[in-house]
Image (tube, rainbow, N blue to C red; front, top):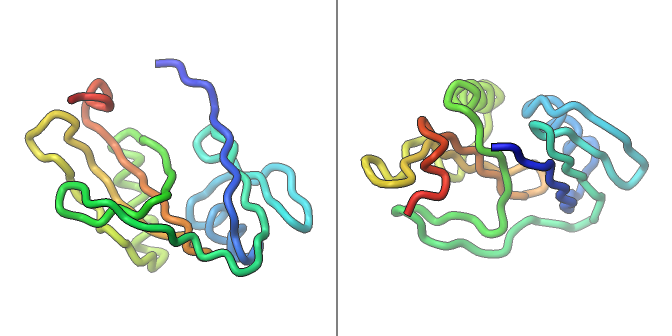
Length: 139
């Protein structure tokens, strides 16, 4: 599967906190920046934290497999080893999970490892992994 990188711009209320979280905890290399935004490399994808004072990241939630999944959210599908390392790094950093790392849809099509957490501005992120990436769009 060959994918083109996506670009996502999202609001944050504190650029220093965004830099510490995305650059430090998530280990995203930093690209260009200004006094109002920072580019990060999220596994080859360009995400841009834009300063928007008062931003909270909250909108709503939908029920999925017994959990309230925050909407909107974004993240990356990792391989299982990288997902497990990410979960360990987030735990070590004291990250509070909205949905703890676990296996969703166990034994069903689309079985996946998933976790949800928020950045310092309240933006929801989901990182997931599949033992078999062919299950990504399984029905």
